[in-house]
Image (cartoon, rainbow, N blue to C red):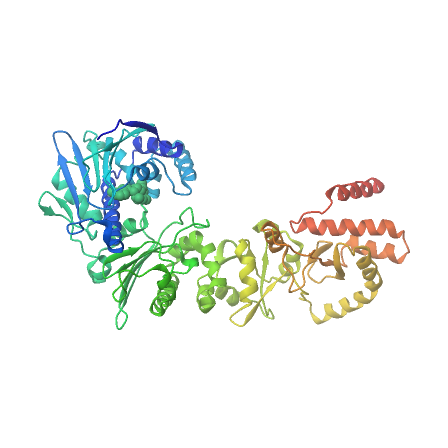
Length: 617
Ligand code: ADP
């Protein structure tokens, strides 16, 4: 029975993307075939696995393959597989919509770029999977039947706003994608995709490693050699790059290729890649990990979290283990001792490969993935040293270049004992913060840490190369010389009474008031005790809904600042205490604003300030 064809609309984002694809002048249109063959290969992997797991599925897996069928007269090319196929709902969900996170952003970027530069090829940087068919075809037909079901589905679209979908009775199991080709036009990089020589050339170039046979007529046109099993010297950079694009669903070349062969009782091969750009879902909760597990050349699972830790979730590739069972599950993998050893070795290999990157590549790597890698400082205590070694940070030493901790230590000046850092929301708040003054004056370098994760790891790590990591906004910092120290002691005595009085006047806001040695130009700053939460961390915890007690910090005054000196003088002369308390409150508010903090009662602050200003005029 064949039902009526129904006309449905593409989801908005899908429609926008299709428009961009149809009108794209992307010069490498041949890649559509790589995408279709790659999808077909995935579908065959899935069927093989499904048949293995469910003996009652009742599908024939003896001759799994991909075939290319051409009709020069009708100008069609069909890419057919006898893989898992799709149900009607899957066709609508997978083909009619784009589920990938970040797509909206991608489309915005594509559009903006199109307006600005015209011919830059963002499409080539993102990858568009099945939709790339519309670069070379003005109509596409899919006939598909999901393994284990009777009902086939026929889908058709010109890539404009709608598609039709209907049931078909006699669809073979698997999927056939038929492209109604646009006229060949070499100037627009559209070739004759019914030409056997051209098709063979494209498959050899992009899909040679696909483990399933790709047939054209009688011939199998791919060599089917698993790249990870071939000697490294025999595989070209281009072959690795194409394989990367297949496993990573990326269209950009990888930044680095990593190979590992383990022999012995537990034998495995790994072929891993560092991408050259971060995926848009790198920091999303449901973001996937990119390593696939094979057992003796048979695909077992995507996104194998047992093989790579979360902080290396951007690593893509394949691990092929010889001695695992084909029906190994995620749960078993998590507990398997061999797998844990393998994971440990893979992590070490990845970290050492990052360390070995040249300066240019390392810079790209860190800009794209540094934030994720730093999570490892918390998650992976065993490799903490190695992760610290490949990490780099902003610092007061340079506005442009990042520094490693090793470089920082090499630059440490005579007498400097600690590695100083300050955390905050952004570089300019930190650079202008009062806490930094004495360090600037002394010429001490300070690391500028602005990622939320920095707050966490600095606490956990504590030290590098025997040097303590010390926040310049916490604890008592004393950079003074002996002479300065004795002056300071004298001042402590002079100011003692004022400080005690201020402490009780500001009791609601601070836990103590003391003199500062870290200030040179500002009147005051607020510092935490060594074990206090930093204001950023406090904000983060509160945002996550963590109940926290009120956290009070210490107000430090700069005794050489005219405002503080005057306050001291007036206090000594027995001035009106209520008026002095208001001035103290203003000084506290200013210190809070200077570190980028928020006033508890801005209305009161403004009122006090305007009163004082009026009185002074
Ligand atoms: P991607 O392959 O990057 O996920 P595509 O747009 O190419 O994106 O495909 C979307 C989805 O449609 C695939 O993830 C897959 O589930 C399904 N699909 C595509 N081609 C086939 C096919 N030949 N057989 C079975 N499913 C397919």
